[in-house]
Amino acid sequence: MDSNMPGIKSAAAGIAIKEKLANADHSDLKTSSFWISQIFMIIATVAGVYLAAQAGLQQAIEFDNLTSTESNYYLRQSLYDEVDANVSLLRTYNKEFFSRPLQKNELEKNTPALRRFVWES
Image (tube, rainbow, N blue to C red; front, side, top):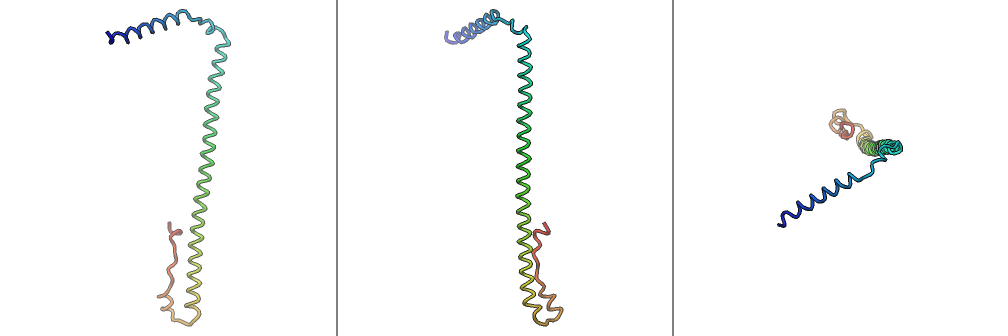
């Protein structure tokens, strides 16, 4: 008997909804003010979605510019550090080897290895 109760309740609810729809006043569907307000609602929705997408795109572009600027800064800083290390190495080499007379083959044998990681990558 309990298994029939949900079926009876849903059937009664369905009948109640049908009666309400039959007795409802649909005369406002015939007026132009209803349709004009619906058209404005659609236009406002489309405009709102467009403006939200535009704002999101603008934020994405600004974020991408900021990210690329930051990445460019780190690349330039790494390049500066590499060149600075190479300059220090060459100054030390200059002080140690060019301050005294040496043979060409000894200079070639002791040529410093410059850092080229950033340049090569």
